[in-house]
Figure (tube, rainbow, N blue to C red):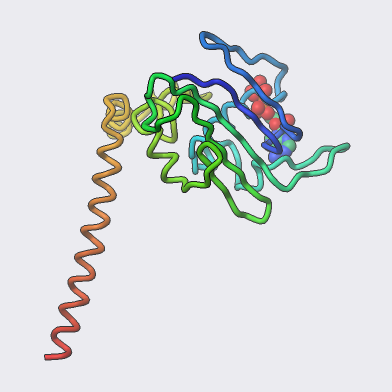
Length: 199
Ligand code: ATP
């Protein structure tokens, strides 16, 4: 699996549609300070399902939408499309190419698509689990993250090691199963109350 291209429109400093094609081996993005290099990394994080505004260096969803400049008007929608080559079948989908799209509107709604088909955020998280990229992936190393690793607590370091070992999928499944057990337990308590009442 490798990244083929990234298309940005209305995302942070990218007002008009810009398409970046990635070389199979090495791509470097260079530019003056403040020209938008980190915004490209933010776009990749975002389209892969990042929900933490702190990780996206923003205060809220609206902050991700092009806010205009002295000479340009703001726009109402931010859209990022990441196209991944899946010829080796790393992603659990029967397609050689997978395009993941995320949109955010100024009014607050969000939309997600996989190869043009609307989907839920959860599905995007699922397909990238254990691939090294994605919301909990370790292949994106942000500014200051090396410092964070050095000063992390043992529990936080264990989380990273677990991600690397590929058990994030099982952690997520465990959390979902525990939530279901808890919901069932509450339902059982409620039914017991009903039984007591009707006796
Ligand atoms: P450095 O080399 O200093 O790390 P950089 O090239 O990584 O810089 P970024 O942090 O990617 O730069 O981009 C910062 C720029 O993006 C700033 O000029 C900021 O005004 C602009 N920007 C961020 N969010 C928006 C937005 N919603 N609308 C318009 N511009 C934005």
